[in-house]
Image (cartoon, rainbow, N blue to C red; front, side, top):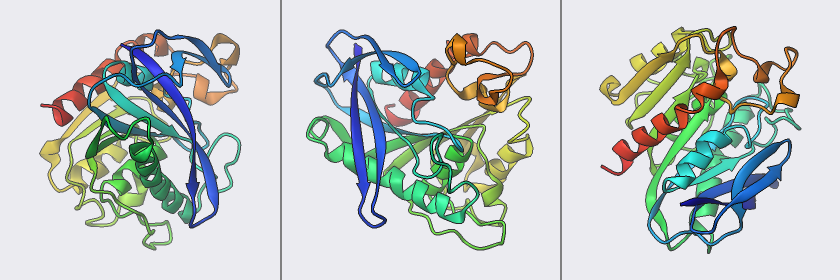
Length: 284
């Protein structure tokens, strides 16, 4: 199986916003290297999707990030039978981070995850082969916070105000990578989250310290549904796919890891661990 790729623009009619979504999916058409921004991916552009029935996975990036940053994960999932949609969050991305720290950021984020699910599910290319009413979300950093909200969590602002978010019953599993959970310190804010969760956090994370996973473990309806593991010596950005050599430098923090941590080697195993977990929770 090879990886097909399709670029979409999704419209938020309510807020008059358009945001990009990159979709990867299984195809029988051989792939070739293609350039997307500073990255190269081995894909088959706008190829027909392979025959079969496939589950949708949404990837939600971190603060000031990009929908291109988790391509090792997305490509591996697509090659192994998933439709993977990576949206670039409006106002909280590498080019426009005007919503950083604003309560509206989470409101937009959750709404746009749901709109992405709708857009991909109803796209003529995918509508006949995508599994209805079932999806998973992978979220890194504030993307993890976003995933919890779409799965039923109730985030609260630093001013102790409830943030209006949109949940979605189609979400059947979550993968949280170094999740930011400060929004869920209020009692019962995660009690309505009742789906299987794979939560991986970094042993040397300075942005989302070890107390963050405890918020999830102690807050969800059934902690037995949470599989939690620490990645020793990893940093907060170690879950991002490795950058090309020309982008790696100490001043560009997302490209760096704690001393001695091999991000390339880690990403040889991470996509497989996520695939195995989703297969077990969504297909068994």
